[in-house]
Length: 68
Length: 376
Image 1 (tube, rainbow over the protein chains, first blue to last red):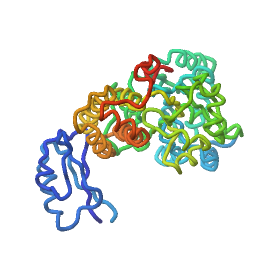
Image 2: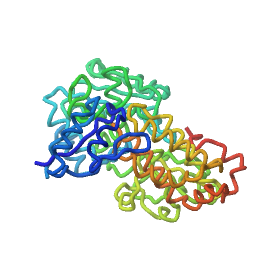
Image 3: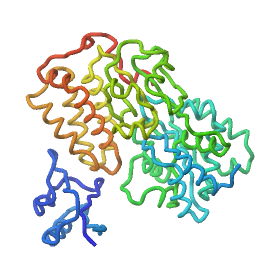
Image 4: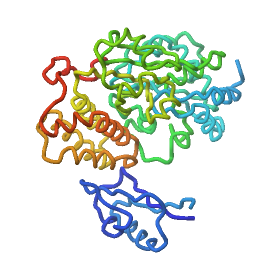
């Protein structure tokens, strides 16, 4: 099982902490809303991804299990 | 008539595709609901029709209300739904009256299973999660999915949300009539704009002929409405209108809209009107849609007015590639798809407008001031 980042787009307010903590997988658009790299999170970034998920002030970011 | 379960198989072998816009296979959708239903599903017949260039659903409901009701009833039997909701756009008065009238001619037993709901105005009110949300909570804005309506919909029950033309087609198939026809709303530079019932084997040239022929030379065709795409007329003119033939070229007929743009009309101008409308119709829940569509709308408006900022065209190209998949519903995807097609089909016009020039005659032509949506 691999893990993938998902954003609840209705919850997301564009705080942008996720992109600061995980620039390898998340960038921001011109209005501060996240653009996720497609595909599974590589193992070396798993811990950083979890920190980004925990840092989201509105709990809009999550890691979902996906088939590799 | 075949048994209700048997009908799902028939819809699958007839390869009936949904007529609401997404062209999702109808049989597969019914099967997904039937597998979860345990006899407590809900059928939501979707006649919201918020697409500005489409007239087909309201016309179908107004003129063939019993066919729509039959389709909803067959769907309810096939998926195991005691309850049916008919969701009709609030503006479609004749359609609503016809459905009510037709229901009055049916048995008490049937009437007790059917509820009519008036869909509020707005482009997203017909999106399936928005329709379910409106019925559950009076709020016609999309919700985060999953769960999708077929998993958890009206009152938390598995819900089949199906466009009214798709239901009517299912009723036809149940009667042994083939499903190779469709309703298309033709507008723009044709002599007789309006609704056409067409054979899906027809080409665009046949469709234009049925609409009285072209009123003026045409440069491009908008396929599938505001969530669709512009296509150069030469590329699609001889192409059959059926979904597989279009999909092979990256197009879709969406909800059956064909709009012909004349050679003297400006594609930047037409696109600016569409993008302004789509921006105004954001449910304003998701940042990329709320801010992105607004910015795009302003950017195309400046270009259309030939008073762009220095890098407006570059910005548009970048933004058109960033929006897909970044909303709770497909509103940003549809808008980005339309914009992307415009930037490609009208590339020369956009480049000229960035230089404050227009290549078409009609920017000062009164006809171009008509909204694209004039037909509705």
